Length: 77
Image (cartoon, rainbow, N blue to C red; front, side, top):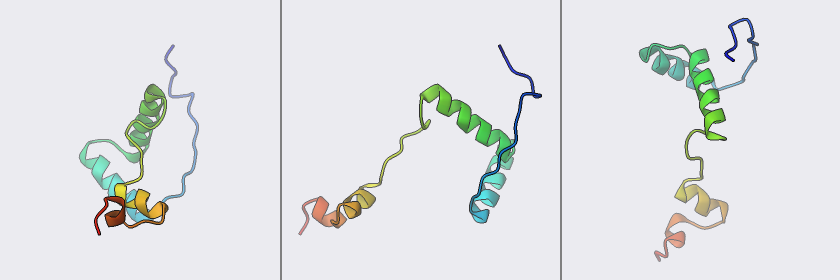
């Protein structure tokens, strides 16, 4: 059963002002507002059973979290 617009709530999120402004501009170019974009993200998360995209540390971040440099991780001297 589909819910109507009357079954909605409001919630607040703290975020970096620059990120918010850039995302509003990006999604505006796509013809949607930030609220709609967030709802799309959340619905896709439910469908995927988690993040709707791959989430992992970058190779350099992973190596630094182990106390190694990227070149040490790759075996480069």
